[in-house]
Image (cartoon, rainbow, N blue to C red; front, side, top):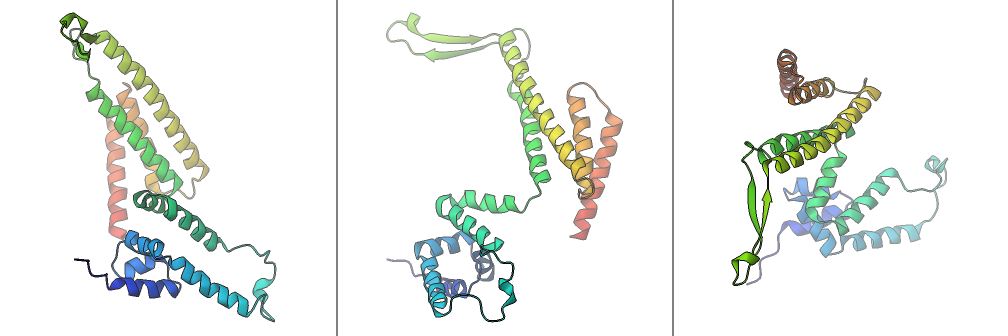
Amino acid sequence: MARAPDERYNQAYELFKSGMKLVEIASQLNLPEGTVRRWKSTHKWDNERSDKNSERSHKKKGGQPGNKNAIDNDGGAPEQNKNAEKHGFFSKYLPEETFSIIQEIEKKDPLDILWENIQIAYAAIIRAQKLMYVKDQQDKTIEKVGEGFGNIDSEKWEVQQAWDKHATFLQAQSRAMKTLESMITRYDELLHKNWDKASEEQKLRIEKLKVDVNKATGKDNEDELAKLDEMLAEIKKQAGDTN
């Protein structure tokens, strides 16, 4: 038995024809934005809107008499139209989840995006401490890498000695730390380049991270770290109270 069509489809379609954006339609009708976008693509709503626009353009071309909006206008599309064109392209070819992520990213400050990447890189380094831990000199890993057929001597085994595993870990950690330090340096540069526009949290969290990294590399300073933790917590609390 065919599923009954969603009654909100017609409402969404009429709102779209009136010029409302997909995000606004989804919000007004309490629908996932992806659903509205799928309806638009499947039923080719753009064609309907294009036909209407074409009819209007044939009725009257050129600027209206006395219209000052055309002054200094080189004929290019408004910025919002260019954004709509870009989003239309993305929504047509990208998976819905990817497109939603792009929309979220557009709202973010570049400094915050870089900070999130720093956190991910730092978390990976900390996680590696557990994954690549070598207990002692006897901590070796033996793994079968090939099967034998009838003769057990034909089986292939790979042995990783403790010193091999530890050397591999040190090399990987060194590369990861260099990448992290490079990202921190870049964050510091962007922060000071836009110091007046940066929030207190953006300024303070880089100092805390530097202390964290120093702690991980043996340059410990517990008092300074505790102080920065308290200051960050207070800033986040104040930000939450204002929302």
